[in-house]
Length: 301
Image 1 (cartoon, rainbow, N blue to C red):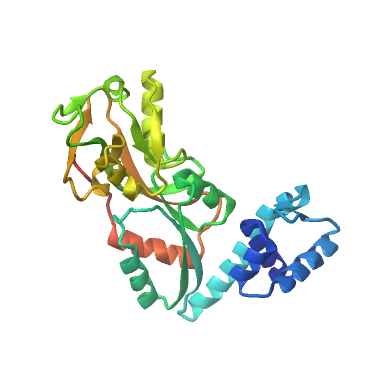
Image 2 (cartoon, rainbow, N blue to C red):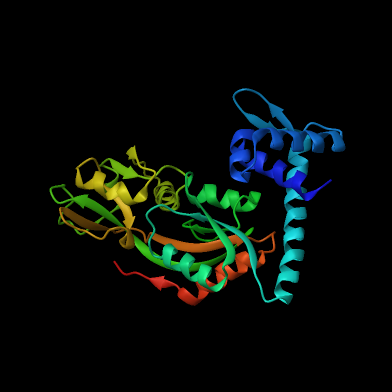
């Protein structure tokens, strides 16, 4: 068994497709298929169930998945150790990012990382399923590090460091009945339709938990995956929304309302999987992030 066999196996498992895996590996699809078939012959078991619509892991494939990641992580750690003796650092770090979160200047951070460690490649993965999806990808090994906005406390199987925290404020159109009220209870807010992100996003989880704890039902009439555009739907009069202050730069045509009966807070953290040792490339990324953001930033209302 070669490391290449495991690399191709993981690429197919992560992509759910031989075609997408080949594209990610920059090889022809027939090469990926041949490598996986060779691995299956060696192990004496099919690793994938193949159909025209999808490629899924068999029970044997699911059993191999974590061990394959551990093996490749160990091989990378061995290579990192040798590179350190030469004063060089090489490798790839895959980073999960949230949409419309500019508290961390990622372009500047990545430029500084390249200047310091030219041999490190960073791959960015956007949050298609919100913080919950990114957290699961950390656990699965598809990400090395991720920016998350999950409700406190952080999951025990993730190592997290807080980067920023801000109260969640309700934003309403300037012509809304709540405009000028300044404060309202959850029950009063629930009388109006909401704009929100889909389930799985951090702020959505915080707000849903608060309404459930209060025994109050609200109606989310519009779900927007890009949190940065939520305020545009509010400004258009389609509903009201909970947002952290850092996400709203222009208050034109808007008013804010504070929640009277609870304190809702949004927090941004950087996280790695507690069960996996970060590679040297990941440690370099985290070290630079600590330099740029040594303490958590707290926003007021």
